[in-house]
Amino acid sequence: MNWKFWKKTPDQNGGTAAHPPRSARPKDLPEVVGRKMVVSLKMDPDEVWALKCVSRPLEGRKKQYEFRIFSPNKAITSGVAVKDWSSLEDRPDLIMYSGQYNKETGSVDFSENS
Image (cartoon, rainbow, N blue to C red):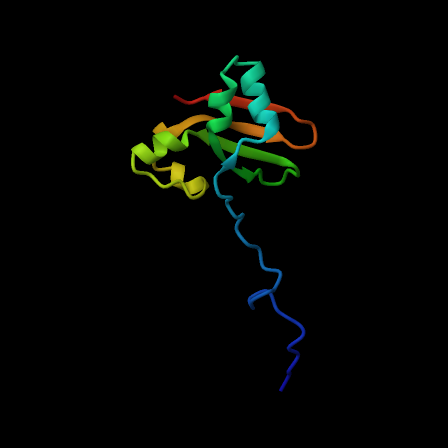
């Protein structure tokens, strides 16, 4: 018998098998995204910082993320509990803006959805 419990294979728990990217919970807007909305789009800062976003890393690119911005108040009134990225796939009407940003360079590209 081969009892090498200290060595794990990829199919065992803790191995190096590829895991699907984990989607993050809704958070406050990243600073670079919120700043661009206030400065470039001339939006009210109080309204901008009340919004939430879900983001996930772009495949194959370090420090780059794609995001979806939504209003938590609108989600609650429509009866939708936004838990992660996939929660908004069924309800595209809740997504106000979507796009991507780079944490290193601070560049932001987004488009209005509503």
